[in-house]
Picture 1 (cartoon, rainbow, N blue to C red):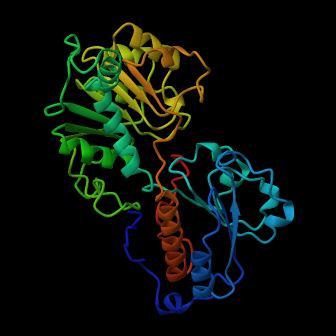
Picture 2 (picture 1 turned 90 degrees about the horizontal axis):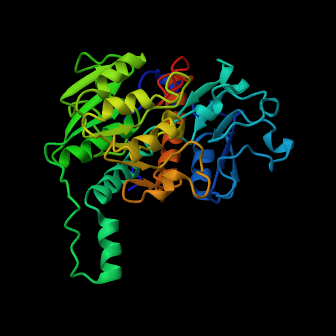
Picture 3 (picture 1 turned 45 degrees about the vertical axis):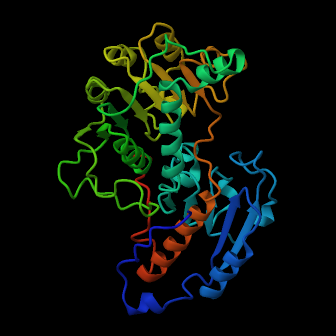
Length: 379
């Protein structure tokens, strides 16, 4: 519960190992929807002499929006930032490191701070997989076992009525395709395999060797697939044709867990639903709503091209009241982008922050950081 991958920092010599005042001129600003953890702040400030933590408590209603409440002087001297959303670049002239509280960086991709290659960006990859994997499997089981219709029937007619026309489908022998085999995809695979499913994995870059299939990003111990041994088949490529080939693998379930970039926007549209229609694939999207063409999804559900859909993200988000996707409870289940939530989430973010500060100190700079972003790929 909220534990961390305790992989030790690597590199650096005796000078780096003993250099605890490396952050003596640094100020870390956190923007999180929780009150300050004073014990955590004190521990960091005592460990690194001169280091200061400036904790900004944002409300849950405002979390995820650009900050308009912090006065300009609140940013004075800030060199490190932990936040989900972008901040005004002119307020952060000394910034050298951004630790995102999200796995994706899509709100930042065109921001001046992100485009400044002198600033290091790290993600919170690995904080989400346990709870999001449970959402993926839970919503799939709820729809495939018709929990809601059975509950409604029992409430209206008593438990004596059985809906004989509903066909329950169990999981052994099912084939799950995971479009984006990162930290979240690996934990989804772990849970799905426990149910007896076969896993096909898709990554942008080829993973031809056992070593290339390993994942060194942060993960909660005992979760995921850090060695990359769960999938029975791996697919890769950056073109739409490559992805269409993956979708054509007779998938019973497709999980979308890609980062949203220019190349992955509306990666699932009418053509892709036609491909999925062969097996009447079930769609689960926990990444970003922009990955899926909403109109094409509505058509696919109405025309029975796919068996159903579970959506924690939509386009637009939130959906307007009365939207077609909200009128098909037997086929489509929608939640308001909540699959990431857990009381342990920000404990994991703080664990990544601590690990990266220590690696920075030992290595004498931002080398070997956990979840360091690939700026070309956007994740």
